[in-house]
Length: 405
Image 1: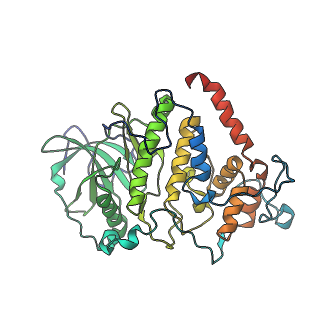
Image 2: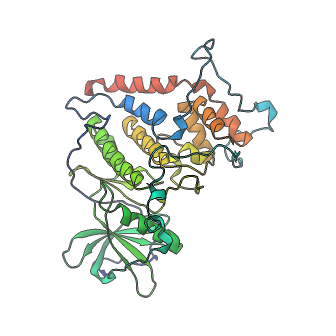
Image 3: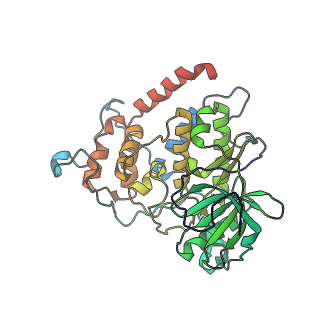
């Protein structure tokens, strides 16, 4: 692979410590929303009802268990769930979350299964999802030139490049040394999703002849950094891009695939062309009912509760939680929306906003026992289980921006 003469980047893994700066692609028509609950009318209504549905009753299984409040209880009365131990029953608990908290215990007899697209990979032939048997067709590395580095991650380094023949821009993702199984999984998933709505397109797969380092070649997106873009977005813009992201997720779920790393860094937006692409499928996986998956996926601030309580037979709804966190961050201009210092604190931050009633019902339904120390930390926020502080936050937001609606 050739290198631009005025640049000093080489297509190797010797430059892992350069600053991260994402950039990517363009063009897309406005959506038809006849089947969507998101209104894109000239005079849009506030997005909050949809936002609440997304958090509390979307595809995430956290919201499947309905709450039954005793009639004699006041709505504001503190509810101390019986599943949470009292502080007096436990050893002294440090107020810092540096204390080691053990894994949750999952009792048998309460499996979790996706409510939609559950059997996609059951009815499709094995070669659709059996990525370990994939034979990679390698392209020519010398067909591409590196222009500049635009980002880096745990498993790869990303460069802006050009195709030598037509000088078209592209993105070159050089994979760091990982298991061949993981590389094949990403390639197979990208090939299966190729052409799907708002899915980044895989153009080519190449590798260095000496080091055998593989690189994935993608379409280029003229991305604007989300930290710069999101504060400028209007109510209409936010709903438009969330809808575009929902289309991408619905498509990949309909193909039996979970993304497992939805976050602003992996959603490229060319605002001038109103084009969105969902990228970085390195953690994506095929969904099989009843299969137990690694809970060490997704970025902390966007992890669904199932990951934080060590529920391994999770499903597509994991991606919807992550999208909900993104949506909340965009409309409230608070990034990230749930800012935990570690995985345990992340669950506490969620409980502070959404309460513990739904969480306790979820834990009981799937027979999950939290580590006692974590249970106490989460249990302290039962006062918030009726959403009043959260709703107050919404009303305050509407009041300060009512001139825009």
